[in-house]
Image (cartoon, rainbow, N blue to C red; front, side, top):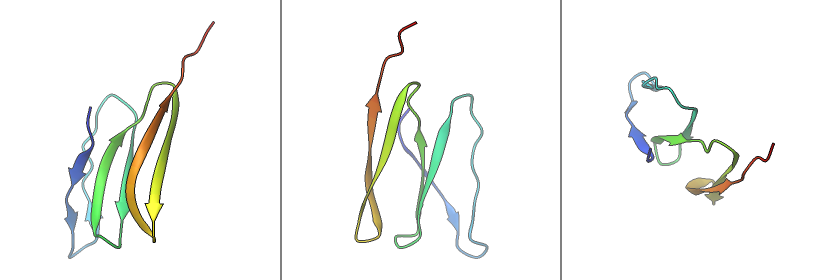
Length: 67
């Protein structure tokens, strides 16, 4: 799953989020008036990158779990 742009209703400042079967996070950048639906990795970390108060991207750090 790739990052999906979400529409922000400027009149009410609301976002409609589609439901799915996998965990996701919503990144809202009020300075750019953008919102994105970002998939989360099954095991690992997701790090959000910012520069001068604006979201510039994210990194996935996958890991493996041994049992």
